[in-house]
Length: 126
Image (cartoon, rainbow, N blue to C red):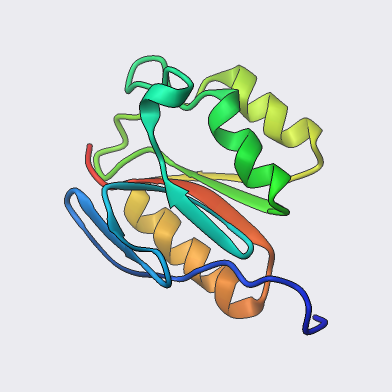
């Protein structure tokens, strides 16, 4: 990996309703990508547990250079991921991983440690 490539921020800790992300601080839900991230506001694209993660939620992560995208379904896996969203990610040539939040954070940090351009959507409650 060359020195100019951006590293994704590590998730330092997680508990119910709280994620602590390197250089970004604490928040409830996060969108992360190589070089940064921000709080994930579900109202932006109409995301909800039943409607699931929307294409618009994922586009920002891919646009910022993620080659692997981890979508977390929450601690209790209540958050849906519609087929259209999965298809959208895969047709961009991006590897898609769907996991519970705890498992997703572990995988995400492993990719960060290996220098892989990883991004994801992390939901810290149900």
